[in-house]
Image 1 (cartoon, rainbow, N blue to C red):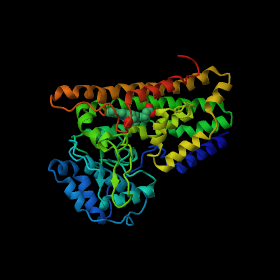
Image 2 (cartoon, rainbow, N blue to C red):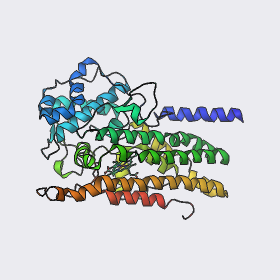
Image 3 (tube, rainbow, N blue to C red):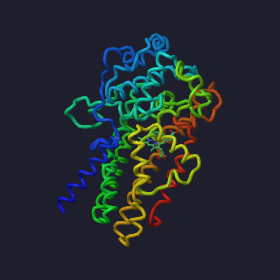
Image 4 (cartoon, rainbow, N blue to C red):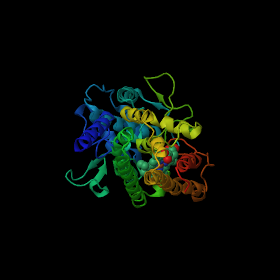
Length: 407
Ligand code: HEM
């Protein structure tokens, strides 16, 4: 028995390793690099000084001066992830600059060429995505200290004071709080295969505890992120060029493609946590089709390839739901429903957050500034370009419909 348990743990670790999931940090990149080789000092200088360069009106001229650099000196995954993060910040700043509507529709070749080559290598899109600004954009202040907000910082900032730090770090801490739920997945799948109801129920309880902790951490957003700064400043820099009337054709990556390309902006919808748990619990967000399903499917293409593979692996795994339904075990079924409940609670809370940080500031915007332009409908769109409330309610309602027993 003890031997079985050890081999179960070993198999679980192998699965996590294969899909680049860290035992303690889940999908977050462990200890991201903070420095690139000196060849890339020009990139780092701009990324480190973005708010000042934008404020002084120098950002675009500085970007245009950067020499065309080869990506060959970027050896290793962490160095490439840091460079992707840096080029993502530079690109967002170049396109949106002061966020006052003066946008650039062409990314110059000195940035576009290395950025697209690197993106291809990493299997990530050439736009700042969640895998960059949240998963790979952090450090501990005291390396031997805990992973807490007070002991952490982000590597690069956008204008808007501490707003980017608050938004990116709280998102990261939610990811990490939810990581025991991801760590439980291989154990759950193996327990189903072996028809081991006890182990299954314990691992499902780990999912419940972990998601409750994630919800607790999520609530810290109020302390660290100001709604006005989020809505009026940070949201602009995270906006993409897909479904965005300001760049209706997309962005032209000069020297790479002859036509403009459309990419969605950075959003926590690109986190693999919720999509993994949906698949695990048989919550059919994608199978039913429709705009919400298409959006979630599209968001997968913004995740690191190993994490996309993990979602595909889950889709081909045994159905936990069918197994639980097939057993006449009220306790097991109740625990399964607690997992669904925990996801519903997170999504309901997320809806409140979106109301506070997007819907309410959007409704106040014209009144604060008499001269403000007519609302374009873009205000109520997420950085990923969705009609947000309809989308989020659809996703939450699909989760609600997935209880085994009516609540
Ligand atoms: C100020 C805080 C936040 C705001 C304003 C916000 C806003 C949004 C918006 C507008 C969307 C719709 C998709 C889009 O167009 O981008 C979305 C989706 C999503 N967000 Fe957030 N978000 C916040 C924080 C978070 C955090 C901390 C997480 C968890 C790490 C999260 C997880 C998700 C997920 C998973 C989706 C996809 C829908 C779903 O699966 O339920 N969000 N968010």
